[in-house]
Image (cartoon, rainbow over all chains, first blue to last red):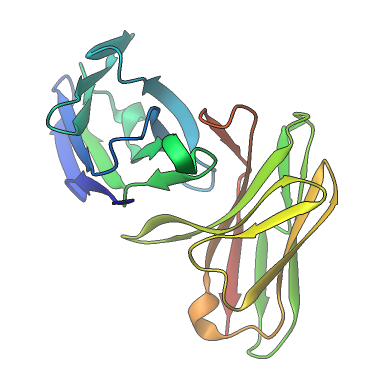
Length: 113
Length: 112
């Protein structure tokens, strides 16, 4: 009930292409769904987040699509750039375990120049 | 200066040694967390603290202990290190119960 499943484990995209990372959750009490970006030697940093009252949120080239009925959400990176090469984690928190954030296993993205 | 500072950044030690990892924050958040990161496993919660008097076990607390010395300081100890505790360790803080977490840059720990 507390798991967040993330796919793919790794992703290679050409510069200018669209990167898509998917996550699925089980606990319907979750009410906050962030994506974190991590570069080598650094801690994860919040990239973009969504709450379940909306189906999409866009910030620049980054978009979260949220499907409450399917319990799935995804990150879309438009016009992917080499500087986007990093590890991306989806996460979920809220409900009775609001103080705990459950993380996906991570996706290593490589954008080829 | 970083909002969440972890020391040391790298540590190599031997099996059986006691190790302390330290975390300090300037964000003024009450909630602090210790995570472990392993390839393919994401971030797993070791311990968390809501305030100085509150300490809670996470999903993988065996072999670890923590101390919350002040609102700004939260340390993680390995009483007797073993090789499978080799990992990246991250400290994080948060303010709202259901909101973003703010991470330090981690400690890379190797146990030989």
